[in-house]
Amino acid sequence: MPIPSHSLQAKAFNSGFSIAHDSYNAISLASNGRIYYVLSSDQLVAAGQMFEFDPKTNQITHLADLNTICGEGHFPHIPQGKSHVSFYEYDKKLYFATHVGYYQLIDGMDRLPIEAPNNYALYPGGHLLSYDLGSGKFEDLAILPDGEGCVSMTMDTERGMLFGITWPTGKIFQFDVKHRQLHLYPSVAGLGEAGTPGHDFRSLCRSLFVHPSSGIAYFSTAEGDIYQIKPKSKQLPVLEQAHLRLDYFGQYNPTYPGSMSYNWRQICWYEPEQVAYGVHGNSGYLFRFDPIKQQIEVLDRITSLASKRSGMFDQFSYGYLGFQLGPDQETLYYLTGGPIYQDGKRLEGEKTIAKGAAKGLEYLHLVSYHIPTQEYQDHGPIFYEDGNWPQYVNSIAIDFEGKIYALARISENGQIRCDLIQINAPQIGQKL
Image 1 (cartoon, rainbow, N blue to C red):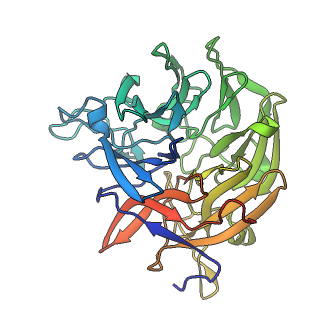
Image 2 (spheres, one colour; image 1 turned 90 degrees about the vertical axis):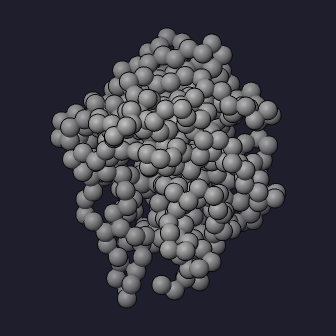
């Protein structure tokens, strides 16, 4: 396929982990200017691996094997295959969590294994971890109970409190870093992604945020409800005046897999307005959420321009996670899909799918949205030098110079792996 003239270029790096599988979130910029990321493994023979990238030298340093830093490298069990969350910096340390990467296919869905492979033990549960940016020391803080992984997490970086959601049943947790106390709340989403489709199955929220003044965390459910996590009173109230069951987002049966239903896909706090900006994954609509007034305002569809014109949802069934504020703290960046046309006809994928995956091929576009001026811009599709393009991108990080990073599929010498890419994007100060 010819490369469109209005396009961006991506540079692929090789971290030396040839079996790396698709990653979700798991990449962030730290205060030292370096990019930290985890490459996933979906195999029994290897755990996920953590790396550091220095934008000044383009040097990649391997930091850790996830099994090893969890103290589980000495016996065969389903490994700590991935991290499914971003890194959060507090008191000169990065905080993150581990997740299972090896699944059992049950009823067409990737499930937490209930039968251990030969000579292996079942998954022991995800760990909450820290990495000291000064000393390079890792610390194992806690393990999640019942052999569940961590699918979502955020942090109150003022008070040192972690909030998250376990997978697959969707228990809510908070962890007090200073006092090393883990508190669990029951699931408010049926049996989560361990449930039976048509009954108690619910897709789980992949992104939480914290209101900095109150220290209260917020997350959504497949039904479109918005919940608060109140760490002091250990209460989990649902908001009475705000929800995500909006016609613009589409119509969903939250008891069935294949979409995030009414969940927001990704959300982040915007300090100047004391609100959160989020994106609904399937529809691609940007919205503004005021947690104090309990108001939702739909702003714009921030899918690619080609997707807008086609009127169709993106091909990734859950929508895309690569959405965050840039270094100017007022421009949102979004890595999202764009349809591919051959002979004037749009390539179509599968109509329905029973898990979070791509229904078909599409390009990757970079979209920006400047909050103060409400200016949307599609910067075009992204390609590698060889004419291929990044696929399965559900991550984003932006360094202090405005260069954009993600974890993407890379085809090299007939093999496909997931690895770090750097996108030649507009620099800070240039008109977007």
